[in-house]
Image (cartoon, rainbow, N blue to C red; front, side, top):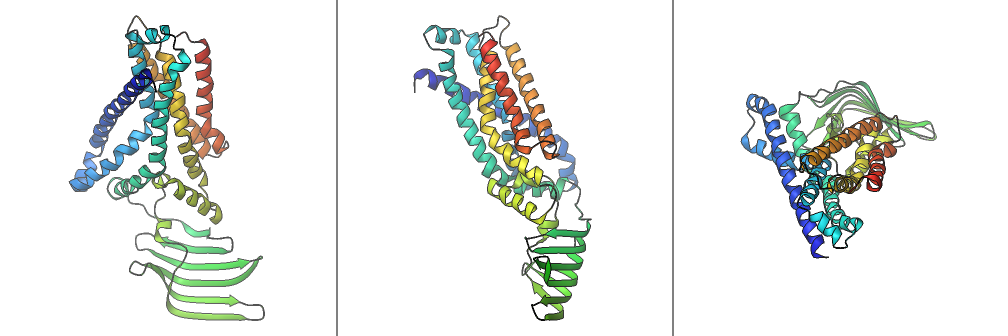
Length: 357
């Protein structure tokens, strides 16, 4: 690696960290201002608040990484152009394409780190962040569905007339095993109640039918412990649950929803595909940022930095719109999630060809 590469990579990465620090600090101050009444009203312990923001900061830093990496690129390149460093680099025989190499290396480092954090580290932190918000910030969630049907496996079907997530009790519960369109076994209970000590369900006034080839067996009783495939977590709020799932957990959740025949799988698929686009997004935005800001301007770097802000916010708006379309099922999720990258790749190539540098 040449001295020029090390110089640009160092300036780029340090500027990126600085921009992230400044923007995250502003967001945290605004967030504290908005939530201070909730913290006071609910008498939240200071250590819980500190832990919440320890989880919140990596999440928000990764979320705004497209903006911060673009701004850092524009800031560094515009400053180099303003000091006539880029002119000197090109005059020394280094091509513009070669000058892009350290930027791409820096973008690759940021993209890979972001992918790892977004796939494994941040979701684990989001679990406690989400629990905190459910406990102290959001309104209490009540499971209010009635006549609840789910398919828990290819042959197992579950029904519950009603369930209270406050008491962890359900009424008129049945679970059926059906093979080749024929009922093989059925377990029903008037009341189903979760036992925290044994992590099992207590079935009250239960009946069980087992249908064999030549006969039918019938059993009944007042109470019975049973380890079912469901748990109270299945009846808790699912709001933004995808943020708290690692990539392997996302795959498992998608498979679970599709197996049970439930709605809402699109949100989890979009989240999965979106995480894979992050490294490519960083590289594309860095590429555009260099082109936008590599020309020396008589008015200084202010205009180029402003253009950087505008383009990065346009990209974020594009991502939000395409994600909403994907979650709505209007367009194929993979195509919709990748659309911003594809469009801005074309824009970057056109700028590379036609924008003076």
